[in-house]
Image (cartoon, rainbow, N blue to C red):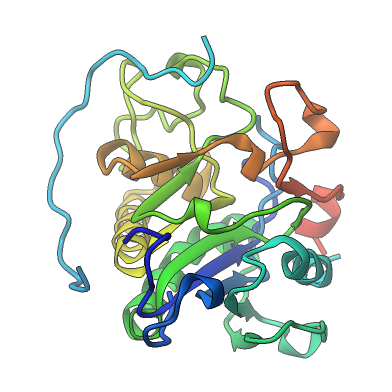
Length: 307
């Protein structure tokens, strides 16, 4: 669906937070772009430590084969504490002027802050279980997004945007990001060759990518698309994780590893630059980045993970 055309329903953003591994729809009828219905799905206790490591049918997208060709070039305390800043900055910069629903997934609903929201924007809190290991929190967000996409979001929104919550918006993020399926270049690897990407390299894992394959390394902290496409992505990633777990395997970068495998064989219809998921403290502000739109908030990853 072209985001510049009239949308029949709204859009969704999923903000998720999982302590440290990489770094990250609407349903209103006949509404014009000026009041674009936008739904935000926010996974609160799922959040990354960002750059620590450097048609409406739920059909099977089908099997894939190897993709060997020249690599495309771009250039020759708990995470709920971050939610207030996330929401405040989203209200300033994210889909401003459009309808937004923030779905907050959390195991601590009583701690969700009250943040003033603009007209046509609202917050919905969904209580989910917690996990003792941050890695399990990270892995299970794919399962939750898949589950709610099928049972709820498919009937409520047109687009979902999945974003880490331990970050803040600092510049405009609007309908330019919308596409059937989009991924974001990881800021730690946008200049790198595919051989340097931290893909899962063990052939026994379902996330395995050979060294002679790969387009880009995508950040787990900002991806999305139509509800149907996000459903396909998250369901496939979750199923791959389940199979790996049954075989005693845990992918090197958890859900981000499976995300990269999926996007290699199911090409995104739009690829966003790293300005949509950046860490200025670690990477500064290089001249190639004209804007920094969605940026990491400084944090003590170890303290948050163990808190």
